[in-house]
Amino acid sequence: DFRSDSSRGHHVSSQRVRFQRRVRACRYDIDQFTPNFLSIFDSLVPSEEEIAKQNQLVIALSRLINKEWPNSKLYLYGSCANSFGFSNSDIDLCLSIDDKEMSKVDIILKLADILQAGNLQNIQALTRARVPIVKLMDPDTGLSCDICVNNLLAVVNTKLLRDYAQIDQRLRQLAFIVKHWAKSRRVNETYQGTLSSYSYVIMCIHLLQLRRILPCLQEMEATCYVTVDDNHYAYFDQVDKLSNYGAHNNETLSSLLWAFFHYWAYQHDYTQDVISIRTGKIISKHMKDWTRRVGNDRHLICIEDPFETSHDLGRVVDKFSIKILREEFERAANILQYDPNPSVKLFEPYVPPPPFGTLDEEGILSTAGAII
Image (cartoon, rainbow, N blue to C red):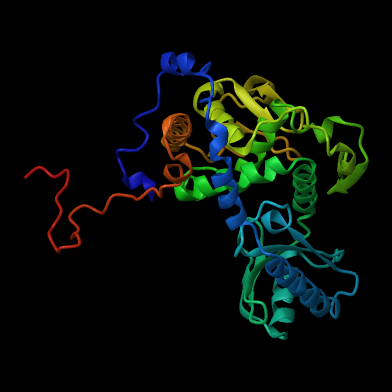
């Protein structure tokens, strides 16, 4: 847990320094680093073989489940289906089933029994989770998988992100690099008060909307209509018509990466602003009534979910982790601005300090920070 490192979060710039740096121009030679970042992107993308294995597993599970529930349907959702998933990631499935006589928990338990009868391993029914799931491992493909029930808004959300990814390849490239940075620097764990991978993707879409590389699909004339739990959602999904939308903007991956971190380090107003890809704009915390803490929901970095608009994706960030996030944004922005080899320095893993009084490699007791 990075909270054990008392040195983190104490180096966030003052408002005066942020104001001075917000107008700083990007280094003139930033584009020379794009090939290095693209190589990193290529190394993170799932192979065709891996995608084929995912589809193989979905087909096999569908056949097994349809024997019990003939009208059910399995959907891939989340990062494995929205174009932003790394290689060697677990997959998420949603079982759509119209059975009003069974509760979600009962369906999960029944589903676990069905899967037990198949050639599957490590089956666990987690009925007390916020979203009840069945976990499993498929020995044929080597893939691990979580299956939820009727979480159809997540399926719609997956399609929205996949549609955005098809408009301009720079979105996917940027999001992969940002997610890789977040994992390396350990600011990608909601249970530790930092942001989810999904949040970082939303932040990347927001940046490219501001730079007119991506449109706002929910503000355009709708061509896709979905109803989930009596709520209606709509957006423009004919993205093949938008392939040249951002052609006027010739920024490279490295310049967009600099812009991303520069924005979150020095330009974003954390006291007033909410980013909203639903509107393609920045909206105010007052408009959302996100000006104060309610229960465990804090609003220190506000990221509106595009469909569940009352949901602040940054609500998990607390007064300690917001300082670490902002410090890491500044570190990244400064590396991209000044470092001679930013594609290496940017991803240097954060290594937490050893516990107090531990042995070093030579077996000597460390008492760093102790009063002796």
